[in-house]
Amino acid sequence: MTHQPNLTRRQFLIGCSGAIAALVGSRLTSLAFAAPQHADGTPRDVLLVVFLRGGADGLSMVAPLQDPDRQYYEMARPMLQIPLSGKHALLPLDDNFGLHPFAAPFYELYQEGKLAIIHAAGLTSNTRSHFDAMAYMELGTPGRKTTHTGWLTRHLATANTTSGRSLFPVLAAGGSQPDSLLASRDTVTMSTPDDFSLIAHWYYRDDLRAGLRRLYAGETFLDQVAQETLDAMDIIETVNPGDYQPAHGAQYPEGDFGDNLQVVAQIIKLGLGLQVATLDLGGWDTHEAQAWDVEGYFADLFHELAQGLHAFYMDLDTGGTDNPVNRLTVVVMSEFGRRVRENASRGTDHGHGNVMWVLGGHVNGGQVYGSWPGLHTDQLYQRADLAITTDYRQVLSEILIRRLGNPHLGTIFPGYTGYRALGIVQGEDLPPIYGDAYRVFWPRWMR
Image (cartoon, rainbow, N blue to C red):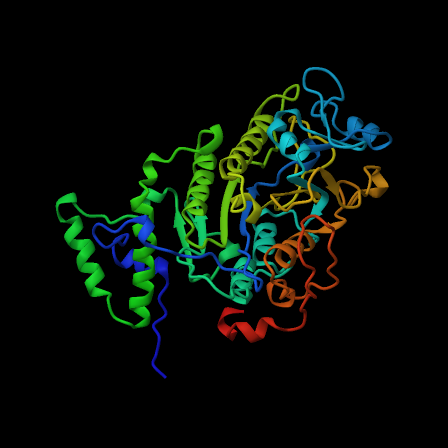
């Protein structure tokens, strides 16, 4: 057997100084690539995972409306409570919960049935450490930080892609690759599609492009990786990503988060076979000065999140049978929530239970999911925090099975069993595959 070098697209890009697109004069219409497909021929979803780093305050995002929990909430948060009436009143989601008023773009998606909310969800491990909690969640092995692959990496390794040539399977939008993609060989880290270009003086660029095509014209593994990278870059350069204009009047927020969402939207529209994308929105560690009469730091940050994802969905919602939102699933999560009781600095300290969000064209939205544990002191986790009644892996597993067609839960989330669907997304309920499949797919050094 011929030895295949251990080379990734990312390494090839670095080796070629950012690499290169293209046969000179080639056109987008002359290239045809397909997204990975289900067995029935329908395209798989693109999964976007948004991580809110710092521990977002889920009880300020989605607060109780009815007594007795409303009474407990107001007593615990005399300065930070979101009111039931007035200028900044909660936006009613159902009889029991209301949405922070600065998240009005989320409210629109929720009312349209595109956004689902899961309350009292999160990581069941007993930790208040940001670093530990993020590692547990992203590695997919709560209580274990020595795992050498991320849960998304294991999903990609076990996904049954029946057809389609995926030139750009994984994108980490922003400056770094998260632990959820640890050991992924296909991840491209990108802040803007303009980064996906050849670093060379314009006078020599065309000659260098043609030279790289000739250099990697063979049939080895190296040539294959290089050719696929060049093809992807050819498409990106052809459409001139620097001039990208969001569709349907979508207004992304200014800053890195909005910019990164636009990057993901562009790559999805280019049809390069994107399967997974990740991006972060940090700054949620609100120990002090969290809010002032509802307005303030937290309100602005939550509005940025809601506005960004609303613009992202609007930008991709083209209508018709090939509407990208019909194969889009977005999941938003944070490492933990905040304490029920506010602190003396108008802030909140590290907590436990939190809110998760799922957005997409096949989401059963307009509903708050999960079993609400209550806010009486005797109902709180360690008598201080919102308890967790929905393991975050249950939400992700439903997306994996119903939207991505991957039932290998034993590999993706080792040790997790007892999965049942909450009904958050539409799709086929494949029987979960548990067991020690983890060892089948990964050598010992990567476990």
